[in-house]
Length: 127
Image (cartoon, rainbow, N blue to C red):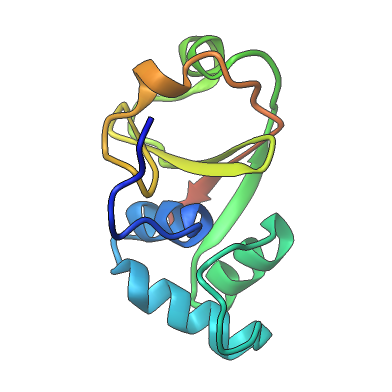
């Protein structure tokens, strides 16, 4: 698979942006302000820092049971209407309105369906 010309390793900020309905650059700027990763940072991120950045922005995520392939996890665990941050190995993606979103596209389940879900979080909606 070839990568698009504007590819950056910013799957974490892209996933958070899709979930909270912000721009990717805005999420990356918030992450950059909080963690100061350096001038050449392209978006590579850690799970704990993504969650803390989202919390600082006013969004709360709750951990969900992980395990199995992405396709099976969605079938068995995903609740319609919830927005999820999912990690498969070192890759982050969002599940929003039944679509798997990452920095390479907004409907990537067919390409990522066999990846193992190692972590899953859902966006807790304020009551």
